[in-house]
Every structure is written in C-alpha cells, then in structure tokens.
Length: 82
Image 1 (cartoon, rainbow, N blue to C red):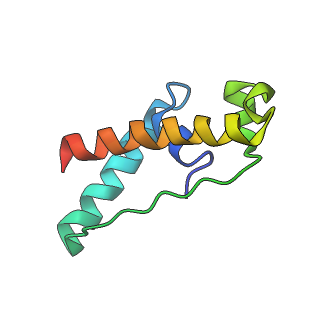
Image 2: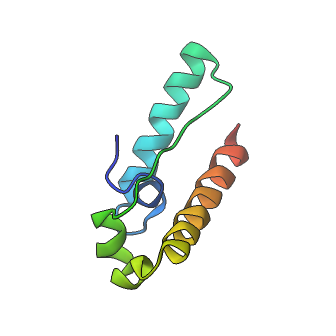
C-alpha cells in the first residue's frame, strides 16, 4: 500500500517509493511468478490533490484522465522490466 498509489510510485517527490515498489514487485515475481498486477487508485485522493493541485478534481473526466495517465506511466515502467 502506497499513498497516491500510481502517483506515489512515479512521483519525483518521493524517489524512494519507486524503488520500494520495484523491490517489492521483484520479490513477488521471484517467489510467485505473477502474471497480473493490480494497482488501485481512488477518487478524491489527497496526495493527487497535494502534488497536482485541486484542479485535477474540477470534474470527473479530468480526474479520470489524470489517473489514467499515471496508470500508463506505471504500466510502462513494469513492462520495461518484465
């Protein structure tokens, strides 16, 4: 569990979080050879608001798109390694 989930993993504000996530993912992969990874964000995330500003919640479509872009970045990261 990481605050901000996909944003927390990729945020330059918390560089050690990406390493922590990747270290954890490697252990899980080595032990269990996972095929699927689920990263779950939620609406009205305070870390998103803190790091990206309240305008990301101006409407549902903007908030959804912001989360979607973060998921894409995390997916690229994971796919670059596995």
